[in-house]
Length: 357
Image (cartoon, one colour):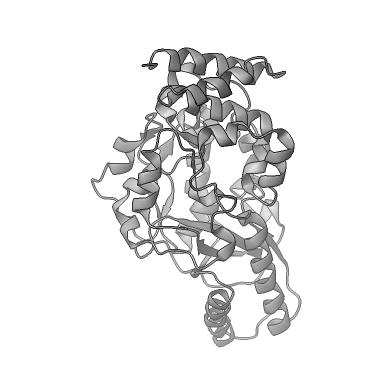
């Protein structure tokens, strides 16, 4: 125990909320560590093969759903959320309609959220240490086997919607999550009630039909998985549905009625860099590897590498209306050293030949 009375605990809880807001988080909640429901859900999801090539989802065994196995001594979890929406949703929807322009999921337009949020959470942990003395903890931001959405749901930050994202009644779903696993015996806030009701907007809008049941996404069909996690060839039958989406997909969030309450972020680090919110597909496809690395420095996009960047762009160019500029750009990479890039370029050339006027 790091505190002496229940009064101390309650005062610490209120102080935590105040510190979180001061650090730029929009909300803080506390959850317990009993994740039995999340464990059952994960086992069923993995058994169905919905994780695709993401073998790491099963690699850590029960550490993902039993926090004290990941960080010994953990008895409560501090969960926070931070808004990242960089622009009004009507602008995002307009970008999707520009077939010759690239669409990048809005979370990835700015600086890498992992580093920004981890620094803020570390500052929160440091502040706790200054207030009560040393305590056991570990900070996480999408960086370890952590069931972050299930934990945030138990902490009252929102409910897991039919698209498997966390939805907040006052803020929608355009936010990042982070956690502090701690040995402090903090009182849990309790789960938020679900409010999706009979709405199917996210299910109906998904371009590839990846939402196969309420709260269940078949990653193998999800455009975010295909453009980011998938290391090999994108299945031919799913390429046309990808449209101009070259990194991630926001369709289910754009369709969600609760996102009418989402606010624009105050974090300048999440605002678009290098014009990536409205760049021509050809421009991005013409980047050499050095340019790619330079323009994606400090960005989550860099993790896919130049080869998969070209793969994704080739698909998007194949979905765009024919133009001499697009055909020229594709032909210039038809003999690319990478077999993965060549295959997608050749597919794209075959596609645009059918739309040539």
